[in-house]
Structure formats: C-alpha cells, structure tokens
Length: 540
Image (tube, rainbow, N blue to C red):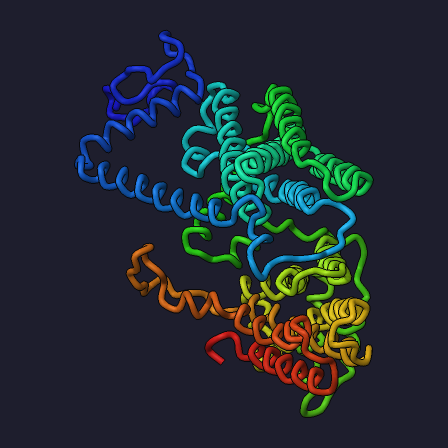
C-alpha cells in the first residue's frame, strides 16, 4: 500500500516485506526454479508449525508398513514361482509350438505398449505445470528453462521407476528367471519407459507429430521379433537386458539434446496440458476409469468435406406409429458412425482385436492362455467402438434433445458397436474353427456363435460406456479410504455383462462341443446383454 492509499503490486522477484526469494540482489526477475524452491520452503515452514509431530510420524509409519507388506508379498511370489515362473506351476504347463522364445515375444509386446503410450504421454505433456503453478508462475518474467527441466526429469523418473520395479517384477513372476531375469526385465522396462517419455517430450518441445517417435519403438520391436524368429526357441535372454541398456543410453542422450529448447514450449500448450493432467488426477482419485479414458483419448479429426449421412436420410422417410423411434435410432447411429469414422485409430484398434484372435491358432496353448487372449481381444475391440456412446454419456445434451424415450436413443448407440463387433465375432469364430475347437463340430456353429458374441459384446460396450456415475455426495468409510455410494455398482456395469457374454465360448475352449445348444446359449446371453444395455441409465 503506497502513501496515497493506492494498492500496488510488489516488484517482480520480491515477496511482501521487500526481501528476495532468490535471483539478482538488485531486484531483477529471479529464475522460476528459485521461486519454486522458495515456495516449497515456505510451505514446509508452514506445515512445521501447523501440523503436529504425530501427523508426520503416522505418515512415515503408513509408508513403511505399505512397503514392508508389498515387499513381503512380492518376495514370496518370486520365491514360490521359482526360476520357471507361473508357467512352470502344476496345471499351467504348456506345450505350445512357438517359433520363438516366449521371453522375446513378451519383450516385443512391451516395446509395442511403449509405442502406444507415446500418444497418451504426449497429451499429458509430458512437460506440464500444475494449475496453480500456471496461474502464479507462468506469467512471471523470470527464466523458465531450469524449472521445466526439473519437471521433465520428474516425468522421466516416475515411469522409469514404476516400470523397472512394477513391470520387471510382474514379468519375472509370470515367466521366471530368478535374479538375473528380474534385472533383465527391469532394465528393458526402464529403457522402454525412458524412450517413450523422450519421444513424447521431443514431440512437445519441437512441436512435431508423435508418429515418427512411435515408429522408432515399433522398428526396434520388429527388428527384435525378426532376430528372435531367426534364432528360434532357446535364445538367451541376456540380450534383452543389453537392449534395455541401449535404450536407456540412447534415449537419455536424445533427452539431453532436446531439453535445450524446452523453454520455447508455448504458454498455451503448458496451460492445456496442465488442465488435462489435473483432470486425469481428479478422475484417478475418484476412481472414474471412463473419465480417464476420455481425457487420454485423442480428439477426433476435423471433417474435410460434407457427409452424405445415408442413415439419417433413410430415417426421414419413416412415418407412422414407430416412425419417431426408428428415426431416432437411425439418427443416433449416423452420428456415432460419423464420430467413429473421424477416429481411424479406433478402427485400427478393432482390427488389432481381431488379429489377436489369430493367437488361438497356436497349437498346444493352455486353455487359460486362450481364454485370456479371447477376452483381451474382445475388451480391446469393445472399448474402441464404445467411444461415441461414452462421449454422448459425458455431454448429455445431444441425447436428451431427441423427442423420444431414452431407451430408443441407447438402441441407436447399439447399432454401430454391434455392426463392428459382429465382424470381429466372425473372425473369432473362424479362428476357433481353424483351431479345431468345439470337438471338431460343424464349422457353421462356431461361426454363428461368434457373430452372436459380437452382438453381446456390443451390448457390453454400450452398457459400460453409459453406466451410472457414482454419487460422491454420500460415501462409505472403508480401510482403504472413502468409497462413493454406488461405486461398486457403477464399476460392475460392463464387466458383469462381459462375463455372461463370454461364458459360452469359454466353455468351448474348455472342451465343450459346438452345436445348436452353443448357438442357443450364446443367443440368450447376448440378448440379455443387449437388454442390460438398454436399461443401463437411471431415471427412465
């Protein structure tokens, strides 16, 4: 407050009282990293005076207890599974005749997952500031290079540590390998994580597309697959650890080079990624997987020309008692088809789900592995075609504007998922037929069951996409924290129908025969899933 009573802002680089948190002693603008450190010191000083010592001791005790319990569980799993992992346990042996070592196949899958994760990491930054940091620090005139570099280093270390310990331990438990295997998979997971974050950071800093960076990891995965196929089964897995070291060194070197231009990231880009990252954090705390998927998904492409909309045009000709319902179904289906067509990566995801069904042709695979492959393919395809329904459930307005019952609107959302997943189901039925499932029954029965399974999985996609959100106004206290009322009911809407729809074909993988009873059972459970999808939302 000046002498004449006017409120004036403090000079940049100072805080109330006239002292400098850092930077030039003559009052120049300090570096933003200095301001961040001063803010953190002030926060720690305030906590020290406002929080009792018992609070800090309780936090330390909870962290140490969690680490001890988790470490004990992981240690016993590693010891119990032994050198051969879970695939060596009684009842899980397999005689699958693969042309390459299983470890190399898993390594290729890990690299492909890293390439897929580049897009999600790019949408989160990976260089981003929290909303309060954007509001208070981004407008200051100080240098931001050191602050953004520290943010990027944290963005690299977090997935690297999680990947090294989490993925490395999980793969070692599944495939075995002992201490050497744990070290190998930890190095490969860490190298893949650093390469993925570096690729996303390069795309953000240089403001280029992330596709070339993805292709780099895909090329490495393809080369590794080719080498494993040439070498055949029994190839030593030590080379995978060496590949992880190469990825770590090369990605770190590239990261050091690209950080030279990190301060050129536009303010609008930092603000956008900040809002998205904050939304993902809130959705994670509220355990809203649907919202997480919506925020992490890329935006649809902009239309380049006018759409013909044949379904909507056909609906204009329908009149009579059921004309309004039919027009609503065709109009909603047309909107979903346009939205899905502007997301070609969703169609690629459905194709990948269909391609996974080809793994059922591998002879000698255990029924557990076959079931996991079939469920993974179904879930991957269902999540892709359920995107229009998820967006409609989030917006709410377009669906509410139709002058008919909400059930007819949801029936319209069923058209596109059912049509796409029937194609996927036909591929699944053909794969099961070629694999000799169903005790060599007639080929038409498995193909028909696959088509009907596609109808059921379409119902699963819509039921999961339009499920009722949990009510956080009332929550239940549990040992793991508060859970909103209706959370388990919301979480189960989708998986419950999926378990029912998958049951007939799982029985086929267990050795049941293929015949009229199979088709009838699949028709009944698929019809039940469709009915559940139509009655998903509340308030009807």
